[in-house]
Length: 354
Image (cartoon, rainbow, N blue to C red):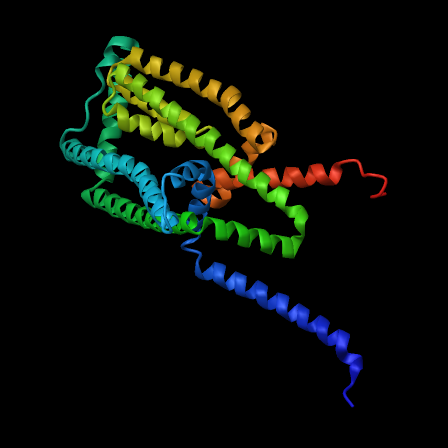
């Protein structure tokens, strides 16, 4: 007769082994796909951020294959929006690299001269600055070589290829996210209900709302900042104001990084002798950054995610440090989930709960 005394222990051991196997499989899959995790995260973020736009686009299609064609065309539109500025910036950057290489070759012989504005605005320091400039120029000529330029070109090329492959996989994943969106949402809802219970659904809704609010508050505000600063660069007489505006917009997505962009451009204008234009760039950039960071972003992100802006800011900074650029959106979503858990646990308990 079989021994029934081992039944509960055996079932408990089986559950533990099953959970250990599940955790091991998830960890192994994450390790195997570690190179593609940024693309998967970007696809999920883009899918959540553009869900309302995709709903409107989907209504334009009819027939049994409407989901396929809507997903294919909308993913293509997103790809065009992302790729066209990158291609334009790549062409302009390549042209500038050629100019820099030529300038480098000339500086090996003569070196760049002292800016003219030094003699005009700093006559009492002119001789000392000229002496220090010549010493630094000679040291740079001795310490640099053509191999350095070639090495930087190789590193830049590898980075461009890596980012291009990530973008390609992001768009491919985004297409499948759009195509199977309803099935994915139902699957996630069923799995989370089975594992955590029905109380987790409001938490997932809040996370999705936090991602959308962060996209609106970070991306759209950064695009507006870049567009305005592009106009300022054009008025200041800077070369390639459109490209510089795009670069400023990208830097504006990262907290406290926008001053690096317009500060460097102002410094270049000052070196070229345009002191007034440099001051205008710094003043307009500082005022625009103050308005965006202290008034616009707190209202958009904090209101949509229902999280105090301080925690949103900490989430953005911590997300960038931990996950890279995609952490700009994952960080606030995580902080929104943590704040929601804190509010639920810290709320006064009802008589039944007592």
